[in-house]
Image 1 (cartoon, rainbow, N blue to C red):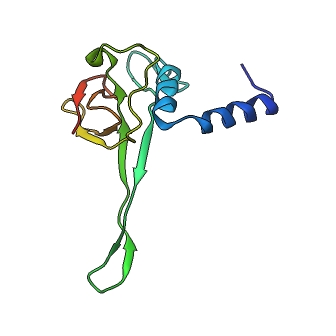
Image 2 (image 1 turned 120 degrees about the horizontal axis):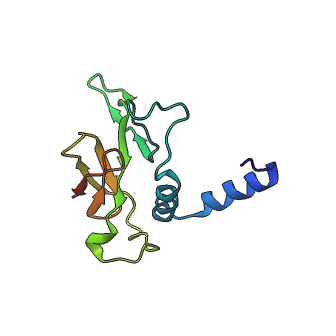
Image 3 (image 1 turned 30 degrees about the vertical axis):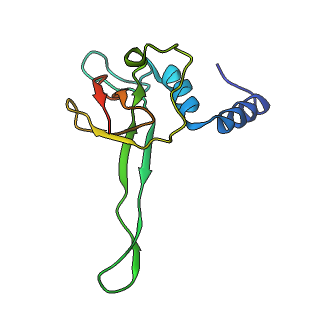
Length: 128
């Protein structure tokens, strides 16, 4: 399927207007089961996930200021089963302030809830 320019612009505008946690819920549904074109199943696995890159502007030892290196985090999907929640509930508007490292794949995670699911390997995680 290909969108025309007006439909694509409308879609982008609507997605930009979503709160972060609702955008995550929508993209989780979009990314589920989606792989990179050309993935050679069963010898290669790939899938899309939402991520975040963050860096700080910090004081340096010489008295100046500089950007620190980027930190990359995957955004964990809310574990709705842990909350006995409706599939259309996106969690709380706390921002993605909860943090953990996935015990299975080792990626750093952020989420807006304490109970999440790693978007890389599907391991359930507890974030603090």
